[in-house]
Length: 155
Image 1: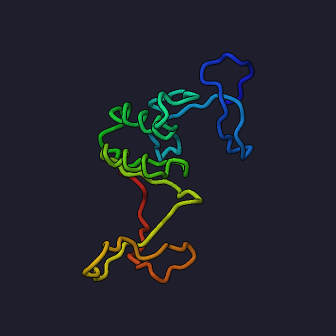
Image 2: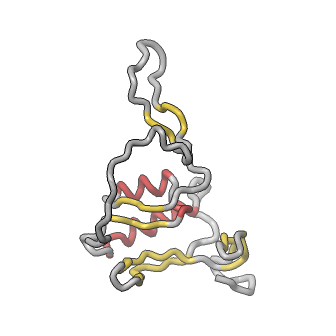
């Protein structure tokens, strides 16, 4: 949100996707339930993003995760999926969502490091191999086709 002035709480530089750059203003984080039948969202919780974290180890991702953990109890009991922007597709946030018993659906970040897990025979000596190369988005030769889903999206 654009904001003029210098003394407003939370005033800082935040990424504006419409302008594709960081700009001075305010930012809010929302938690909403999406109704796919009525094509709308019902906001359950809104928090202003602080300009700086409370300590050096915390980032904005930690603030967003704290918001979700604090308010996920307000979600209906049959909700199991959290739909997020690509910014939230980070290990810290995804693991935190899983700890709360939810699954995250989101676009991958441009710099996502996707790797195949190693399933072959381990060598008798040395460190065990964990990964078997990077996933290249355009190359589907190593992927297994599971099936198609043509049903409606509903609970």
